[in-house]
Amino acid sequence: MEERLQKYISASGLMSRREAEDAIRNGDVKVNGKVITELGFKVNDDDIVEVDGEKLKRQENKVYYMLNKPTGYISTTKDDKGRKTVLSLVSGIDERVYPVGRLDYDTSGLILLTNDSAFKNSIEKPEYEIEKEYHVKIEGLLRKEESKRVERGIDLVDYKTKPARILNVEYNDLKTATTLDIIIREGKNREIRNIFSSINHKVKSLKRIRIGNLRLDIAEGKYRPLKPHEVKLLKLLALGKIKK
Image (cartoon, rainbow, N blue to C red; front, side, top):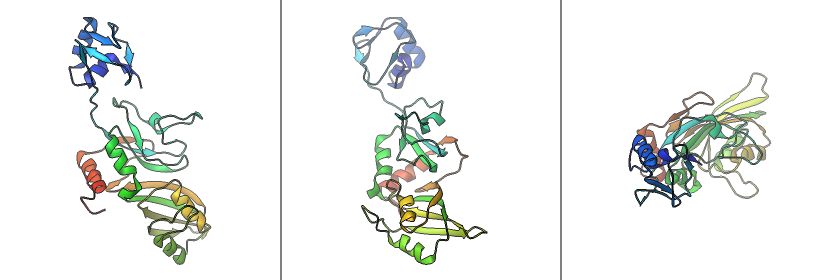
């Protein structure tokens, strides 16, 4: 990801952006051994930037965001098929952020964005067992015995799912569909869709509404920074310091 040289220098903590602009104008800045005096010059993380002979190491401010992902977007930074990514929904974030985990193209709801790789890793890894809650609509009526099977764990082709919890089961007026909330601790690829498919219920819509202590509270397509206490609680959950 390219950015203007003065912004890169400022992000290192060495000086303000205005001071960086002055340093560039004065010929005090080199990129890959070459003096740069152009303020519009762009660099990336692979470039070697020196100010007065001192090599800079970028020190990004750690940032954390909640995004309410609509369907029709993929949870990656780019796509070779030209599909829209979740990063196309955000603007005005100076830091280079990445999605935490994934939501399928046809799944909506809560996804996190951050530049903190340790935090990203702790939320993504299944062994940390952070709860993830989804609102689901399936075809047909979900019977009690089927709910119990899901809650015990379902044998899929490659693995057996861990015990889940099913809440707030409701049938539509025509008795042709069921809505429910399901809480899981793994979140493997298309896990919920595979769970219900294995008991002959097609998922019609799927939305993640909670990760750990963090519940979705913004409109679809919108995003907001996480509050310090929200980040702290998520980190404590991942470390097992508080009850999941």
